[in-house]
Image (cartoon, rainbow, N blue to C red; front, side):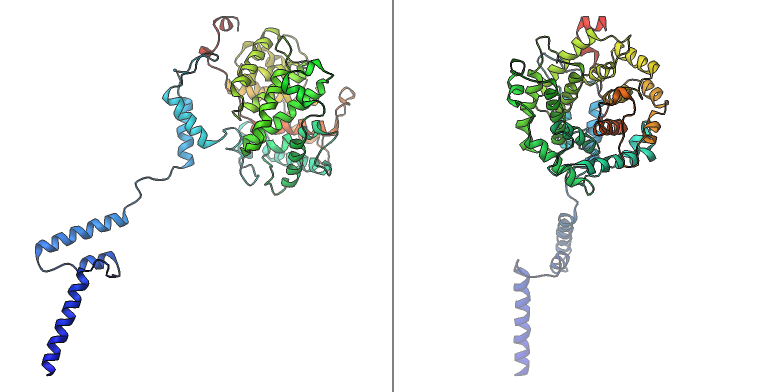
Length: 449
């Protein structure tokens, strides 16, 4: 009896094992164990089982077919394409027929966002790499960084409860420019609240008077003041740089109106009412080029003004508007002009930097910096004057700068401090603007250049 029970038990266990092997849903400890259980003594079956084992292992353990795209790879590809000569690009004003290289460059550019702001600006509000840029362009980085931070703290202490500075919108826009240059935005641990309240004040205010006249071109038909146009240009510059760093869609409509306002307030001769207004307007339009908003009309406006300016500019005689005129030509991609080089030489000879007005000092430093895209010799000569060290040494203990000369007494400490900070931030605020290639200039313009 016991023998019969043993036989039945053995047969039962064998049938259970065979059933388990045929069941595809049975549980196994691993893929290898499941396939190894199928291996029999037969050589052919063993070979087939080993092939199934190796195939399954490769499917489970193989690396992904597509590796994730790295930002550094995008940057290297974009720079490689940027360095190539884009021969298929037609002159400005004619029909554009971009080559495949241009299409790829634009696609990579979208991934990189804005190349002048976003690359250097981190989400946490900290700007990394200042020291390297300062050393690269010959600035004493140890003193500049501390002086700038102390100046920003002074501006922070001067902010009013409503988020404004000084007399209103004009001074508030000026005060925000050094924070934007430093990438101290709303997320900044030191100045985040200061910037947030300031930009909120700017966004809710349009201009001091009659903003609708700016956008419709009706300004000169009504009672207006050139100072209102300066305020409008400064506000446009601030919001354009802010948009270039944040890509906030709520800013687009207002920037479109701002661009129209600057363009429509030109006179019949396609110029603005004063040289200082023109210098600020060109910088505002230059900031708009980073946003891609109204790009064609903005670039056309800049080129129209640069043609007029080149005809009228006298680079053989020094004047307070000469630095701003040179900078305007450079930002309009006319920095390789012979009159620009003559003007820079004249500025070095006169050496009027210290006694000049605060905005003129800022225009002059920016003009020399923009020249580095060509030779850099003018920037090095200007740097050798040790003017930056003199600026640092003249900073007051509370962090501000003040005007001592009687002819500049009309400038407040706020204006003086802002323009001085912008001088110190020159090496990392913007990159030099590359001049247009010769094949994009007119025939007669090349002859008389």
